[in-house]
Length: 312
Image (cartoon, rainbow, N blue to C red):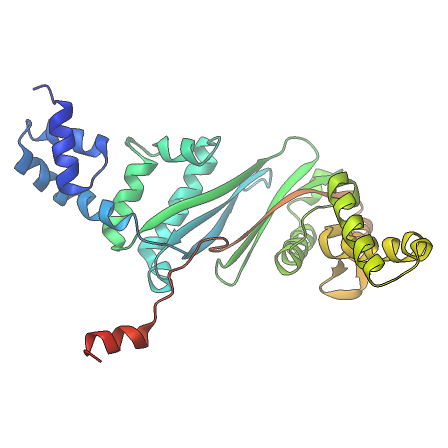
């Protein structure tokens, strides 16, 4: 039978479920509202919809790298509690999302959510996520992802820190691709990922820094020095160059001190590794995710809550 918009609206108001879920439930139930409500409960959709508005800032950053080292992805999936993040159900869901990204190569997060599962075309990632919410009994959210794929003379590697609290995806240019699968290259790539995770650079090289960022930094340095009464010539000749050098040292990967040997820069470490491996290697780009970064977490005052419940 034909399902009307009014029926969908009524069921949605009763269950808080999505429009398409309500329409499907009504279709499966021949338009019977009560049967449709029961169908949604059986599928876990009603519970999932109610949980989907709760803040999820825990979870994991995970990666998948192809066996040939030519492609990979990094994904952040959030859940409400660290306890749930450590369950096999959540870990299996994260792994499935990583595999989905690698198989379907979605353009963005919306395309990912709308994509049919590569191993089960009967459901989308959005439906799969709702099922995970119902199964895990917490809100689950696929927040963001990055995917790299290279052709000739390149490689992709990842580094995951602290069980998924930080994740890094790196693309390398490699003149001789035969080294990509070697233990020496893998150790080098891990070091670079660790460097990015620890020191959080913004750019790979000085040439990548936008001129407006440099101009802004120069203005800040100059104004501060003028307020301190420094002579303009000293500011221009000594203070600005010195401070900009320090700016690069903090924000540019190649200029940073190498975390495993502060006697050398990352650029010097890359040059040394290139020599040892017998081929020219460079970092092309990277993505660095910190779990829950930018998500506003709800802060509970447990003492106040206890006192409130106790009537104090």
